[in-house]
Length: 437
Image (cartoon, rainbow, N blue to C red):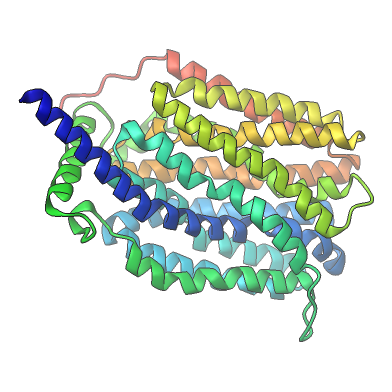
């Protein structure tokens, strides 16, 4: 009888996770697809916008990266608001704001307005990604979270796979006194505004509120997630103040900094690096840019699934980070050999993106309750400063040396740093947590 009950519970659990996955993850990934595209489409706009507005590489790099300063300053409070008022309500507000600002990027006139609009876009987007990571901890047990997170994060490379050729095509538009890069910002900003209605209908704040689960399914999922929460509270960090004093949380932020500086340093400059290979139209640049991200999407999914299957996390973060760093370093010395440089940049993309799904299982496994909201946001905030420094430093170095070589080497060093930190933390014993009163 006991074996029969266990099999029945296992079947029920698989059924609930499958229903939650199909209900939530494709829609969440669509939202992140739009979010990420609106964040990085400036990389394609730069192919013509920089010349139209007279931007140097330094101006473009600072403007592309300054989004992340707004992101960092408002991320923690935004995520705590989400935890208090509910995901569906707060995500709808976030999307309406970022969609309007993203479309408004069409009307920048010079460096100052470029910096202001990118900063405001970061403020508007601040709570979305950490909010989605937190939201998944309400619905999916830890043992499936790398695979689920990997499915959600597929939106990142896929937004470049599909967004790259579409963005390059939109650069060819003209009309009503607007040029291609202006139309691109408007057309790609509007979907976020319209999707706010869908957010209010599709997202459900907690398992107890899900009318798409029956009573038995709700009970099972609520029970599993509550048991996981209690287990965390007994052994892990649950207090918000303790999060800000936790060395491990800050180290997670530094690891994510190493990942983010590679992701955004590469993503926001890749179209211009490929354009620099010579003799390519904007449409050809868009098509070539999509290739590394298509392979990165496949690698991200397979690597995340392998992490869940084996239960191993540390090497599933460290190994792709190390591979990404080595490939970036190799590409730095191949920029004058386009085919080899492109292969190296593709391998670098697969490696850097491949570390993401398993990375997020590490901090979410040690944080609970309000501490999870603040901790995830703090890690994301610290990490996303890399989103500023990556593009900005590449732009500064590009102007100073007339080459991408040293900028790519810098990105490589930070990817290797992430691998070293993850391996070092895995060998260090966490500080003992006091027993709850």
